Length: 619
Image 1 (cartoon, one colour):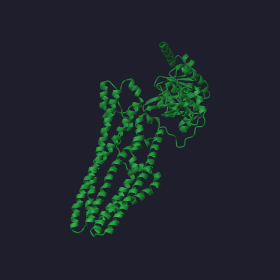
Image 2 (cartoon, helix red, strand yellow):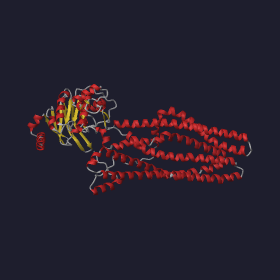
Image 3 (cartoon, rainbow, N blue to C red):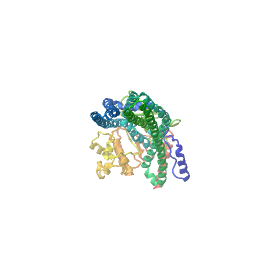
Image 4 (tube, rainbow, N blue to C red):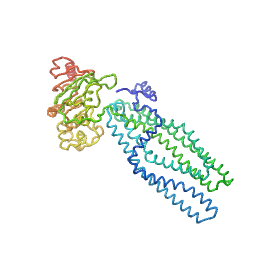
């Protein structure tokens, strides 16, 4: 895996750690590079596409609530002006009661309309977030190993949780409020110009001044929120790493250094948030200042118009109310713009993942791999994890149906790479992998992987019951089939001794189980899937010798009719393999049975002798 570049803000910490002789450098992953994109309205449109499925539910409600709410709000100041000019000045009590009752009815209408709109839109907004989060998680599940090689789990997690949650305000009320505020502004401008064109223009002229002053802040705010998202991603990645590696941290007594590093990251994150928040808050005073200028113009110029009989006192009061209603949506639009900047920072990160293409992808019309016999052929395979550094150098290897192939070699020789290519976790740079004559790039991933079982040395156990963990190999398996698989690998004996047997709940990663027990569960899971090709990657590395002997006996029966690939450093476990393949630096150096290779006296002979000597000295 390529080594990510160190972030400038963290160089100081890495240097201090190096001087103190403590922890290694910390690095920033690829997805944390700052995205220098302009404000992309097309991206907002793309987010809006998630509202499309609900447009038939939204449009009638939005239109109805917008019209009723805006009408009721804009009618009230005009009624107040009539109450002053027509009722109070003329002493008309009946007209005053009618106008007061009408205003009360409009206030009640406005209350119920807004209440219903907020509740209804929140429900739809949550459905949109549900769809977006589901879409993101589903897409990530389909991405290739290369994607995860470059990113820590915490960084991926923050996209699905924090970044999606950051869009909540936008989807639950932001879009609708934007439309309502725009309609209200248009209505107020029309009314102001209708009541008094001179006074209306004098006040509205301050609006461009506000946008000119605030415009310089926009780019800085967007970049500030991008920076906040990146800092949060790093801190989440670090926390996830620390939790997963807590045993190593405590074993090497590095708690203080870990706490210090987290404190540094936490401080950087806080400072980043403070900068973004400070820029955000600058919008409010700008709008308030502009509103104050507008109010001064209103009363200075309004008084002049009253003096010249061009405006009534009631109209001036109405103007004052409309001006208050005018700056309120302007202020909300400023906040909405800031909200959109926050959403833009998060949406860039979300769509970056959604736009990520799987490096291992199916063809447009892939075939379905039929039930296979198990013939496997690697045809002149060249593969590299990093460009220019081949992990396999033109190897060719064939396994006939039912054969057991053992892969042997030093660390980094290419053993696991061969397995990864067979499962099509990666695609070769050159050459082909054939299963029963089918190029695996021409068939669906599901039809291929469903017929390949794999047991890894680093066994992953999910939170849940023992039974569910074994059933993960074949979800439709019955309880009897689950227990049969467990008995075949000698896991049944320890399972029934657990508090609730097969229904015992295991913690995340199966920490309540020993490493050997976790490997036995993984073995049962793979066998339950009933694969035609079985891969054992150091599958017996953490199992005691007695249990391993039982498993070897079970394998003699279970591997009949299956093709198997075994990676093992404990060479005694592969003596009975039909073919042993010795790899070195991506090349096949030797092939043959155990006896043939021992007679040959080459690399394999040397490995066996060295291991035998080591075990003898250990005893």
